[in-house]
Each structure stands twice: as structure tokens, then as C-alpha cells.
Amino acid sequence: MTVLATLWIYLISVCISGGNAQMVQMDPTKSGYVGSQVELRCLFVNSNPPVKISQVTWQKFLNGTKQNVAIANPTMGVSVLPPFKDRVTFKQPAVRHRTPSLEDTTIIFSNLRLSDEAAYICEYTTFPAGNRENMVNLTVLARPVTRMSLSTPTIVARPSSQKMTVATCLSANGKPPGIISWETALKGEAQTEEIRNPNGTVTVRSDYVVVPSRETHKQKLTCVVTYYEERIADSVFLNVQYEPEVTVEGFDGNWYLNRQDVKLVCKADANPPVAVYKWKMLNGSLPTNAEIRNNTLFFKGPVTYDLAGIYVCDATNNIGTRSGRVEVNVTEFPNIPPREIPQKEHSSGAIIGGAVGGVVLLGLAAIILFVFLRRRQRTFKGDYSTKKHVYGNGYSKAGGIPSHPPLPKNLQYPEDSDDEKKPTQIGGPMGFEVSDHDFDGEDLKRPYFTVDEGESREFDERTLAFQYGHEPDINDDMVSQTDGSVISKKEWYV
Image 1: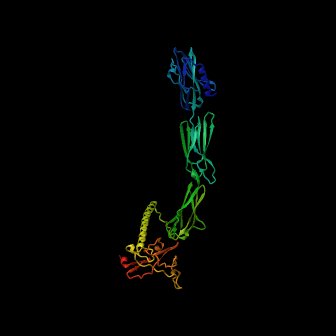
Image 2: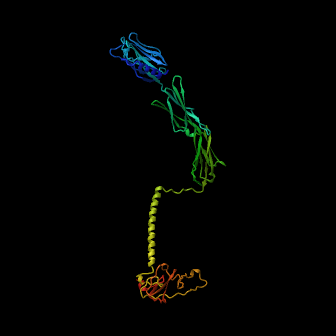
Image 3: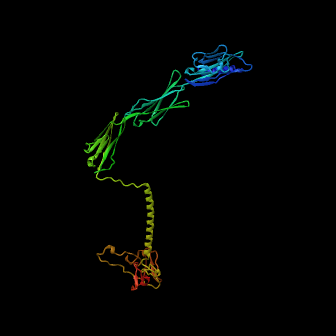
């Protein structure tokens, strides 16, 4: 029968005998750790008129069996029975007096054992009221013993390594059992089991399993055992042995002829450290000016083409041998990398370039506008009303120069003339042709024509042409314009 079942039976008996004036006061439950002490309180509440206490008996009630622990009798005195004799005492000295006071018979349980866990009855024998009793349930706790250790002092990592236990955490003989957790940056998994001991305690074992490698070396593993609100932590560092990880440094891609003081360095990450370094060259032997000093290969004198090739460094420790290599190229001239412009310079350069470009564009626009206006005015100075176009596609004053006579229908050129010398054909209703020297480009494109009153004009869908009278002789005081018009020197030089 368990302690809880015993307590339940006792509570039923108390309820049946309830209603009496006298009562025994006790705590319903108490607990203590193995090796510690605990007080089990027992007080007798007497009513008026008071009753006579004949004896007080403490009993251990376990699995339906009662076992006397301690007795206080006014006549016989105090008696503590084995196996509690050296570990149980009455708290109040008055209990041990010749004329004892038995209203407070609290006992102190020292050096608790797991076997002390049970229900304890404090029974008062009175006259003439009879017996009065109560019960307390004592729980004995056991703080677990924690320990963390490496599975082996050294762990060897090989290329074909499988998962293995690298560390073990124990929470031994706990009651109740401790809860184990792991804190680490190392990737792995925990395998946990519980072992129940005959004395009622539980041992928890947790193994941490990983694949050992170079990355697991010197990693920290922390085991945390949580027991009630207590947190117990312990840590270890892994010691993993592995083959060398080798790289060759020193070649910067810029070995050119006559360069001085070049060398190659063999770097190896290994545990335990590398004991032997060996240098060799693929498809050949080392240059004659090469000198080996431990893990460094020095080249005496200037660089020559003989130094080009693939260099190999073998590094060996107790676990194995690994190699590193580098290919060396020799150039005639040094390689000078282009200067990198800082980001801020790029930004400021872009801003300045944009500003300069804007100013240049504005300047070009101003120049083009100036040239355009200048071109329109380059053949005329003075009032437009004084200018006369030969073909009437400009402005003229009334009574000006007579109209131009019709041009011959065909213009003859020598047989050896180039096609480029032939006149441009301009067809119209009058059927005459004009040379490209007789018209200004702008005049041909002008959508309208202004002529003196009395001049005749004819239209068709393609061309606007005019008929003029005979072309007058140009006097000495007249100036011929490039667009076919004439103007007086007096007006021209205004």
C-alpha cells in the first residue's frame, strides 16, 4: 500500500471520529532531502474541562503496517526505538521533564534516508476521552549527482567517419529524476535513457552524438540538469584530431622577370600539428635557386621563366598526409591593375559631368540659334521692303526691277561633263527648267510668293511658277544676291 493510500484511509477515519472537542494538529505533508533534517509538528488542542494525557506515540505507517518510532509517557519518560534512536528527538525539552508537558510533541528527524519516506501518525491517548490522532506524509528527496565527461580523451576524425558519442552527461540517483538538456553550437543529437534504481531513485544518462570533423574541434558542449528550480551546468571542450588542411600562399599573380624576393608558404591546419613538410614540382624538379626552410620555399635571385610551373606541398601529421598546390605563371612585365575610383569620386564625377554637359548643351543650342538667325540675314542689310527676288518669291517695292524672261527649255553641256554638273529639273506648267544655282533652298520650300502688282502667276499641284518680262540689265549700282535677287549698293551698304 502506498503512502497516499494510507493517508486516504486515515482521513476517512478522522472524518468518522470528527466532532470531538479535542484534536491533534499536524501538517498534511512535509519533505526533506537525503542527509538533511525535517520537523514533524504535532500539537494537542485540549478543551475545557481538560482531559488527562496518558501517552503520546509516534508511529511509521507504511504498506498497512505500523512501526513505533518514539513514545512519551508521563510515568515512563521518553523512549526512541531503533532504527530511529540516533536520528529522532522531541523538539520541546519539557517533554523530557519529570513532570512532562505533552501538548507539543513535535519531533526532529535528522540525517534523512530514502527509507524514511512514509506516513507518520501522532497518537494521543487520553482519559476519559480516548485516543486522538493525526497523520503527516513525509517525502524524502534525493538531489541527483551530475557528471559530464568526454567519451574518449581524443577523438579521431577521418574522411569515412560515422556518427559517434563524443560526450556523456549523467544525472545519477535523483528523486525525482533530473531533466537533461544540451547547450552547444555543434550540430548533433542527444540520446537519453532513464534507469530506475532499487532504492527508488532514477539515473538519467544522455549521450551527445556527432560526426567528428575538423569543424568539431574545440567546440564547447554544455550539459544542463534541471532539478526542481535548481539548474546544474557542466561543460567540456572537444579534442578532435584530423588530417592537415593545406593551402599554398605567396603567389600573387604578378611574378615578372627580374622581380626579387619571391617565396611560397605552405599553410596547414592540423591536430596534432604538422611534423613534416615536403615540396615538389609537378612534371619536373624544383628550380636550382629554390631553398626549403620548414614550410617555406624561398627563391634566390631575380625571377626567371624557370620558376613557372605547378608547386605541391605535402604536410604530414600523426593522422595522415594531405597536399596543397599552386600554379605559378611568369610574365615579362608587371601587371599593373587599373586604379579603382572610390565610390564618392564616382558620385561627384557624375554630378560634375552632368553639370558640364548641361552647360555644353545650352551653349550648342545658343550657337545653333545664332547661326540660324545669322544665315537668314547674311544676304540682306536694311529694310526687307527694298529686296527684290528675281523669280518673285521674296518681297519687292512697287515699280521695281522688271520680271525675268523665260529660260531656255534645254541647257546643253559638253559630253565630257560629269552628271553632277547637270542642272536640277524643276517642272511646271510653263515647261522650263532651271539650274540649282538660280534658287535658294529656302525659297524653293517657301509655301507662298509675294510679287509686285500686275505680275501674273499660274499654279498646278506640284509647282508654283511665274511669268516675268525681260530680265533687265544689272546696273553697276546693283548687287546680285546668292538667292537670285538684286539690291542697290546704296541699300546694301547701309
